[in-house]
Amino acid sequence: MHGAMYLLMSQSQALIDMAEMAVSLLGLSARGYIDAGRQLMIHGVFTENDFKLYMNIVKFRNVLVNKYQLIK
Image (cartoon, rainbow, N blue to C red):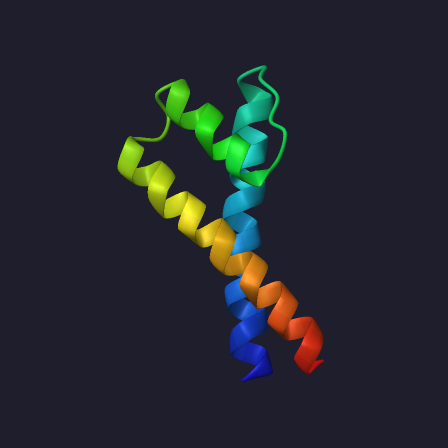
């Protein structure tokens, strides 16, 4: 179970890191993980549906991080 949680956290974090890198490469700034996705939507990189999925992944990652720390 720990391995599966860690894998999901890692994959979620990789997506978040890519979003933050894309924002930076566009010369923009973001105030957090969700704002990075919002900036990508505003600038046409994400569709509205992409942004909703991205937000859910960020929230899911946050839950996983907290649960993983409790289990560990």
